Image (cartoon, rainbow, N blue to C red; front, side, top):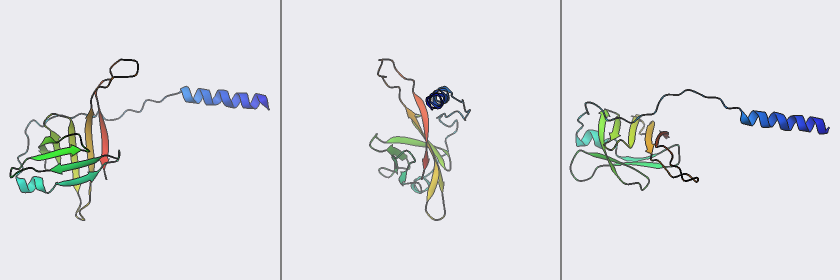
Length: 137
């Protein structure tokens, strides 16, 4: 009986040490070479708050009477957006890329790419900044 338990423990240890690389698409946030001009009403169609799959909330707003659209995730501060297409926007500081699929029933789907800045690790080293994805629900 002890031998069987030992084999099971060894098998679990070996499984925990294995890793598998799964290739995926590279997540990048780039400003469009030719930004699309959208007027206040076109941008206004996207105003609102959107729940993200990571638990955060994306807020899209317009300020004043201009056409500009601003994005804010939780309380991280607004970022001015430029239109890359009729349904995708990039923050001028390249910290966000938002793609929205507005459905006829008023619901929205899509994806938000967010740049996570470098952070100090427990050992004192710095991690690299990276881009993460969240789904719009």
